[in-house]
Image (cartoon, rainbow, N blue to C red; front, side, top):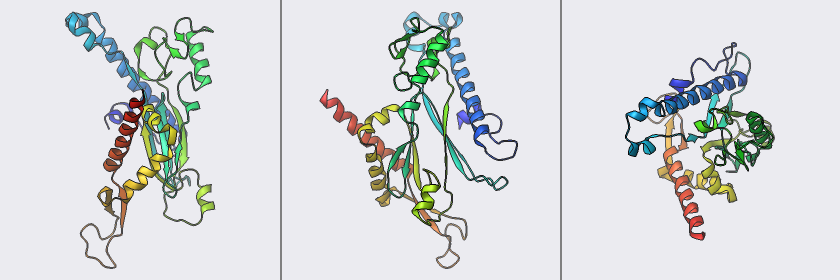
Length: 287
């Protein structure tokens, strides 16, 4: 909410009054640029001569922060009857954070932004070419060492990381996007129609996570679907919602509002974090 209020300024609507993919991409690009500028401005203020004078030498190292961060985000666009546009979702990422789509019917898990789309030189040759072009040299001239910017940064796009942006802007905070249709009705006509609706026709949820989360589950992404299916089966993990109608507290009968059950996000998050920690502990025990 804070990011939206500070940086996602203006409207993501197109002139038609609908959410459209191009207008959403433009809005999110501006928001990422605004956020990155604010972070860099804060870093410059920390490193100003006056700021240094106000701190003792012992505090200087602890208080200066020139690190950065990747990000992944999603915007859901509702149906637009005015132009007969179906509802869709837009996922954006800066760096190597990930988005996973989980199927309601099969619990299968799909990685929406595979490694070849990440902003790293190791997995994305186009990013390596872009960085070398920004460095204005064939070999990076010290700005690129191996597959890392400045010999340290794995990612080629991130918020912050001022040493890689000044004086030479080798990395950026510009996101890439993936759009997919969302089936907003409960009709379950047949599998062929569902397949035609796109990968999210029967979506259960989208998980937005870091590359560390992906590393923990990379050997078996489908394990995530099994965890979600198990969590959904637990009575303590379900939230019952009342649809519009008679309302909460209505007496049972013909006029009672229909209810639906969904997974408690907190319970699901706790289950996934628990498994991530278990896998991490198992991996460390092998070292």
